[in-house]
Image (cartoon, rainbow, N blue to C red):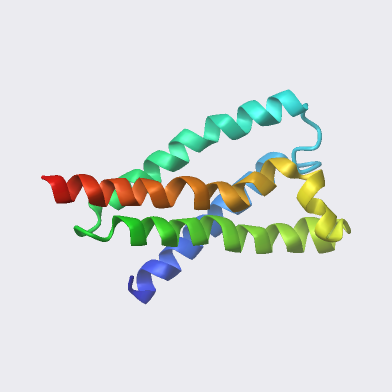
Length: 129
């Protein structure tokens, strides 16, 4: 992937994090019930997956897995860093924010579980055609 695409992805996930941060105010989603947060997490996963799937399908043949690995990185690593800065340092939860804010923690590993197989399947389907 070219540097320009890396920068674009970083900007995109940074804007998404900021919008989710605004939506979670005043208590970064702590004001909502566990049931609501489970439903919320489940509701946002399919649209995110669809964006990644389309990105893999629009990539050059044989690059679906690589595209999905980059998306996994950008959806998990920068967002973890932003949450660590905000929840860990600013709010004072240190690494304990991982359990307190479990509903964001799931998105540090879910991309690595869901997106690479998606990219692999996109590549596999293309090779069969």
